[in-house]
Length: 477
Image (tube, rainbow, N blue to C red; front, side, top):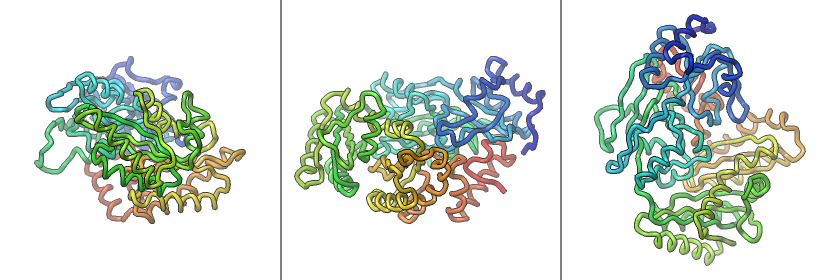
């Protein structure tokens, strides 16, 4: 890898590929690309390239390979682990995929859409909706995150319970390799056992093996019935019992089951416009239940009514409401999706994106709370998330009146406490946000040595010069 800043002449060679109109060189223009939204990482770069085609991406990578120039792919810049931030040494050139924003094809018969990497997730939703189909990935950042980034981090979201994460929602990819070669894997086959699954190597690789430039994404028939309920409960144990009932009653029609603590509802009601607790009295915990059915609207309604009735009868549910309109459904989901954002006005927040077996969630929540409060008395724990698939966003707000910088300075310490409990339950410290810079070293320390070695071998095979997103995901010797 290069050990010096790119020379002006080399920068000019890269700029010539995309044209001056699509290259950023002014510090003020580059500035938004140098940080991530939590402020944990800040890098340096003298150039942002915005190619307009897969062929231009290929030319950039061919030149980068010839000159040993590090390239950092950039999507919608909504990531949480520093995967899109260049290193501090200023050697990296940023390659933004925002101009690769075409939806190449929508096929309602084959139930696929072919979208370029820079297409915003919300645009895929609209393209699917236009042909009476559904693309089920749902994220709070869907108005700005891009398909390439969703794939590179194997994004999950709120509908994983039924539809799976991005790995399950993708049939094929187009990828530019570190050498500048193009792999056209835009296959739309559901059955294809013709060798190693190269697609799965690039999904979740965070741009360290190749640059995804387009993808074949799965579409689904639109549900005919959709219902959303909101229930107050006493504990995560009660929520788990309700989830078991809901799963038995609804099967695959249970498309969302979200767990939220009282403090999270208080934060959103306090700081997010038009959000309020829909129940008449406060409860220690809440769940949001989402049901979608393909046969008729009445089926979803009957399922939700049965879930809530059985919850009441067994004493699991303390109170509940059913959304009566689409606007009310959206309002309930808005509360859940705003929970992380609502923590910002409360001061510093130490965040965890973890997963444990679903049955272990109550024990994990209980043990983590005890350990965190012992280490940081007065910390306000806002652990919420996808109970149905075991993914909890275990966020911890600073004690009231605490110094924000001092609290954030304990990030690694608190991470170690929470992650030790996650591992004790056979979980993962990286559920859906990725590895990036934030979790790279910790994962190297805790995963079996053979896993790290195999990942390093794969990186060496695809990117022997180490020019693609250096310093992320793996740490080469």
